[in-house]
Image (cartoon, rainbow, N blue to C red; front, top):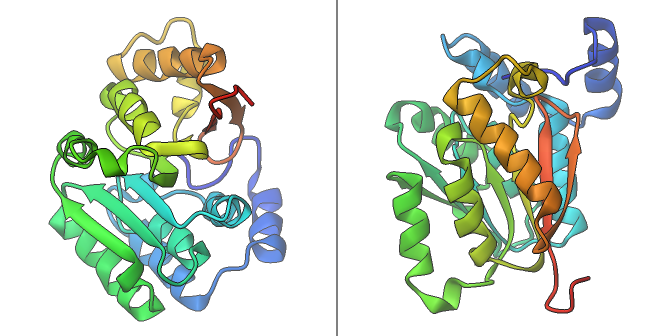
Length: 226
C-alpha cells in the first residue's frame, strides 16, 4: 500500500502532485476524507490516478472493469477519462466505503458512467462471463482487491478484455515484499507469482512500472500475436 510512488521522497512527490497532477478541488477533498479513515493507506497515489485516466484516454476505452473500489478515487479518475456513454463496472463488498465514493461520483457528474456492484468480485466476473456477448467486450480493467485471488481475477479479466485491451494490477510491489526472498505470506506469494506469470504469458505483453506500490500492466495480444 502506498499513497505515493515508491522512490519518491516527500519533496519530489509534492513537486509531482503540485506541478503535474491535474486534480480538481473535489478530488483533493476525496483524498483528504479518505486519508482520515483508519484504512486510509489503501488510497492510491494521485499520480497513479492520473496515469490511469491517461491510459484509458490513450486506448480510447469505452468499457472498463474495476475490482476493488474503496472510496472511489481511482474510479473517479477513470470515469472522467471515459467518453459520453462510457461505462465502468465497479466491484466491491463494502457499502460503507462505497457510500463515500457514490457521493463524490455524483458531485463530479460521472455517476451515470459507473455501475457499482456490491458482491464478491469473482461472482460478478462469472456473471459477466456467463453472457458470451461480454467476451472481449471490455477495453480496460483495474485490479485492486484481495491479493490471494489475483490470479483468478487475471484469468477472468483476460477473457472479458478485447484484443489490445489493457489490464492493470495495483500493489504489484506489495510494499517491496515481492523482492524480499524471506517474505512468504500468502499475499506476497500470490503477487510474486502473478508478476512472473504475466511476464511470460504469451497472451499478453506486460510491463511492471514503479507507480504507486507497483503497477503491473498487461496488454492483451491480438489474434495474430501483436
